[in-house]
Every structure is written in structure tokens, then in C-alpha cells.
Length: 314
Image (spheres, rainbow, N blue to C red):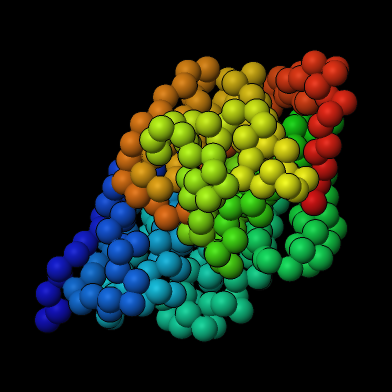
């Protein structure tokens, strides 16, 4: 019988407010690349409820640990509630394939499917480093379905597309070392969630490399949501992306979470909180916004500022 030396138990109710607990439990994995440690167990059997962000985080920790040979013959316990969550959000085949054969999973990565019903839309999309492929796929197959689902509210569509664009620009800027990232949208007629998680260079690392480091890591992360802060000064990245997401969350009284390399920044229902947490290699972006009173750039910026913004879908 294999001895259990290290165990991670997923939260019973794995929602956005459980992210810090999960990160705290997982942080040591990033120090185990190519260690092939024995006796690892990921216990998903205690999960009673798992939302979109929970499934995405579990996928990323499984993908990282397997791809980087962190464990030798790791064990996984998966019961019905998490199985149902994987199925709901379109991750069943991808996660199970990774657990069985990571080489096959590499091919399965690009085959995530959008699911649309009368009550909600689930839209997982692989983010590939082929710009032409990503742009064409997202513009022709991905975004039109979201637009059609929310066709009753043109301003909401504009806001949703703006959020997608800025989250993806952040991904392209920071996650240069991660080839297995996914953006997921989960929405109904009154609310939409968007999340993107990577294990590449995090916001903190890229800002430090660009000489934008503040007095400490937390101050550096907080600076990332300020207007004009970018790690690519000599490019068309103007440093508005995370600031726009933060402003949209503020004006809609929504939720915006940003985690990177041991720090977090929250804006929730009009209140801001920041602090330190376990280390997550890369960046976690989570956004949940109500659609009753959508906002656009015109609601955020003054007319003069708007003339200087050149934000467009990739």
C-alpha cells in the first residue's frame, strides 16, 4: 500500500472565495518540478459544489504537476459532485485525459467546446500561442455565440467583449511560458463570470523584469491595476487592461480577483482588499459582473481620455 506523504484536499464548496485556501495548500507544488515525489494524493472527493473557477484551478494544478513531473504515480479521488462540475464546464475529457496520458492531453487541449442552453452559456477556450489561429477562432466561432446569447442587450455585449479583450491582452503580455492556458466564460441573462489562469511568468515577475517593481510584492501587484502601468513600454500595450477591468467591477458592483506569486487584490461589491497568500506561479484573473447596468469605456473615461484609448479585440 502506497504511503501518503503529501495531500491536497479541495474545498468542500469551491467558489471564488475559496481560491486563497486552495492556493495556500498548493504552493509547495511549484518547488517540486522534476522531483517525482512519492505519495501524493489530490482528494476531490470532499467537494460538494465546484464552480467554474474551481474546476479551472484544479485543471491547472493537475496540468502543471504532471507536465513538470512533480510526483511519481500520484493518486486522485474524484467523486460525483466534481465529476458533474467537470462535465458542466466542459473539462471532463481534458482532465481525465491528462490523468491518463499527458501526451494525448496535449492534443485534446484545443478541442474544448462551447455549450449554450436557454439558461446559461459555458464557454471554455484554449489559448494557443498561434496568433492567427487564436484570432480567427475567437472572432469566428467563440465571440459570435456569446454575442448571440446576449443579443437582447447590446451594451452588455460591448462590456463583455471589452472584458474578454483586456483579460486576453493581460494573458498575452504575462503568460509567455504557459502553453496550456484556458479562458472560460460562464453566464446567464443577468450575470457573467470570466476567468483565466496561467502558470507562466506572473504579473509580479513581468513588472519586476520591466523595472516597475515597487517597495514590496504587494505594492507591485496593486500597481498593476493602476492606469498606465505596463511591462511593455515599447509596444502597443498601454497599461489600461487591468485598470479597465477594475473600473468595470467598481461601476457594476461586481467582483474582480487578481492573484500572482503570493499576493492578491480584490474588488468585491464596491470594496477593495489586498494582501498576501500562498504562492501561485503565474496569474489568476477572475471577474464576475452583473449585466443589469452594463458600462462601457464611455462610462469610465472622459471624452479626452477616450480619444487616447485604442482598445480592440485581438
